[in-house]
Image 1 (cartoon, rainbow, N blue to C red):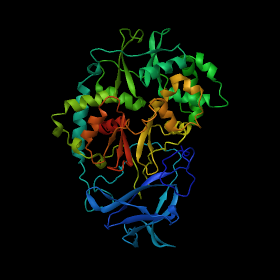
Image 2 (cartoon, rainbow, N blue to C red):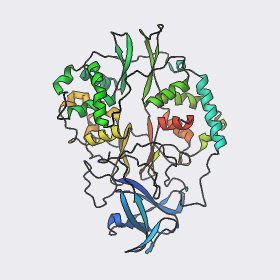
Image 3 (cartoon, helix red, strand yellow):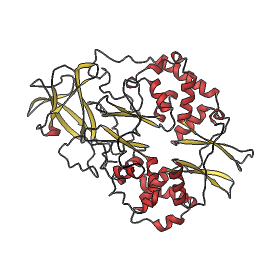
Image 4 (tube, rainbow, N blue to C red):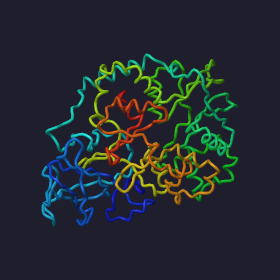
Length: 480
């Protein structure tokens, strides 16, 4: 994933957005006051002063997020007309006097996941450099109490409670053409559908947006055995047979995707269902019921999601939130989600972001290699514009757009417009939160249908500070 990463302001590299260098957003903080504070360094050739903004609620603390390339960098702060360095950060004597330093390691196999220590930003005064005003953190005892009560609730309730009174669940026959299947996904507005094999009288798997991404990449591969003509008649069954070999080629590490269907029964506990979703890294689990021991002639009852289970938790503890001390904690104070790393955080894992001009092909590669379901789309100031998710790929099924485009020549902006009005590229699809929001507030937002992740933004500027997914919340709540 080195060819696509977050790009900030120009740092001396060519930055067209389509195939730019790997850039990692980092947070610089000056916590010692001043009226006007700027940042400058080797990454701007010392010729540009980057204005820093005071933190909300603490005008003496200034910060800015700036994207750097991997390697060694020097920097200083220009405070009220005077060059200063931070004695609490690494510093050396250089050509520009005493300067602070930072080294950013190149990480070729970055998997954005919950870091051990969350990043910080400007919603509250809790930066690592402000040691006199730390954020109140929850005790280990309160954390265990909260986790125990949530796990006990989920263990007492079953998947049967998720079944709606009425409704329909769409399933696909493995013998229909892949092209037809993705038209159905697009028209029905669903990212995934279970697969039924009539010869076995069983549900045998699912077809998801990831399948479409892999197919489009294969179509764009000059050495591929799959052609556009074959896609017209290529069945889901035939695609699944060749998927293991293809995924090994793409991953380059002989990893194969699970070929068995991950499912649950109506009387499985909600905790078991949630753990199955987390461990299988899937968006949903089919709830099926069969009266035969071999699982044949099973009935598809529902597609269970983490969002539904989270809604059950929020509803149950709505009037007794005090029994869960962790719910009132701000998300910045707990190890939850993926955050923009702070300067000096050598173990921080960068957050993947792209520009609207980035190529669709590079973005799809990032989605697969980083094993994430979405990527924030940002402007030159890393302010949130929109978000590109795996499920957005089904828009290419409209009017056979997949047969008329080249992944490396179409931008993400253009790809999103296929499924939207031309003027809707304005972030309206993005679900956002602030770093000062409580876990309870974040959980309530994620419990809404269709909300699979929240982008953490800075108030006012909407600079991206992190991202929290449903799976992040459940991994934290269940301690898995």
